[in-house]
Image 1 (cartoon, one colour):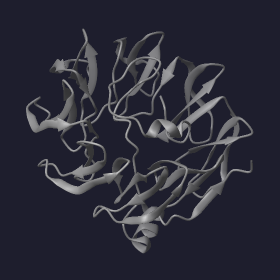
Image 2 (tube, one colour):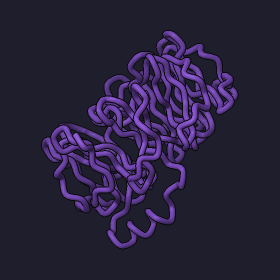
Image 3 (cartoon, one colour):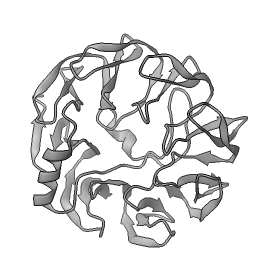
Length: 315
């Protein structure tokens, strides 16, 4: 349920699983954009979805801006998340539903929790239980789980009798519950925990990278954030260190950039570990559809892949 633009502090949390009320997953901070400024700006304009919505807080109410920074949906919701697959989760009087790119309610607020859509399904909570709905608001997978995560590569992590496994889009178990914790699949691999350490499995459930990490994130663009000891770095899909551990937090690559922290400041690196946007933000969120939400003090802003400000809060 928690998105970096709404709850930026949630971006930097170690992978621990999911549970109703406070869904835990690979809550490493994430990134997006690209390594080279000129190419980054060009791709941003070409690739950004025209209907992407980005939540903003205006005097305690949430609305949305579009990719240009224009106010697209007036601030009227209690809480809001970024759009995904054409819909954005919003909270109205304590219940979550979904709006389209114009701000019209498409799925009535009725859930206790709601996540962004992923592969056509969204994880929602009804009381203490979690299930998955389609864009027609019907349950594709009944809310039978105490803990679950989003779909990736056709599979989603779920907890059954205290152990984690994976279901397909029909709700059928494809990887038997056997792990102490589990994250979403991406690039054909998923992080799972054996005791105190994380490794990675493939879609058959076979171990692909031995469990040696204190924290492990999902693979994106061939790299995954991990922490072996005190700091974060990145590995490739063979398990080899690609960017040495040197950051105080680290997250997904997307479009060639990842959000990392040095001390209490956040910036963005390229796939070589070089800073493209220097660490100057007090808080920062994931890039989505060409924009990332960042904070300087209590001021929320949105930046594009060049680090330029697209929107600034008035307060």
